[in-house]
Image 1: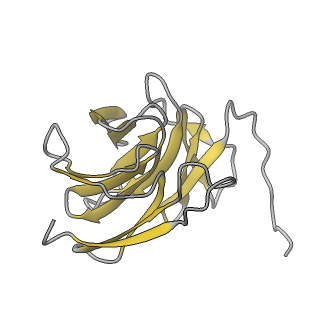
Image 2: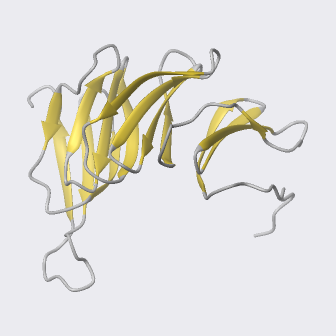
Length: 178
């Protein structure tokens, strides 16, 4: 496969996530910063000027209110919600231990996150704390996938995959009954 265009930019950190923002823009999470890249103009990415006070972005998920708000996951156990139009952080959750690998929208105003601590947390972004913790994972939960507003899949690996006889795990959660 050939690329039609590559753009080099002096990013300070890893490019950990890219999500579509509009038909002409993508949102990039790079280290501790968010950037917009205009796909039609093909200019250099422009910093939004918001990010965590500490830690690095690991994932992004656009909330269902349009694309003005995004949820993000970080190392250091953090999940945050940002308003991109107002260029500010709306809420921070510090409920996980270590890296939060992914955050995903599971419905209007609802998020899920998964982390090294073998937990999946559920949030209502209008509230200050998570409303549910889903445990029973064999180790790090590295991925979550909402199938719809009620069904969530989590994927976990054992604590030391290279030396373990334990196996990975997929869990199906019906959120109406947890």
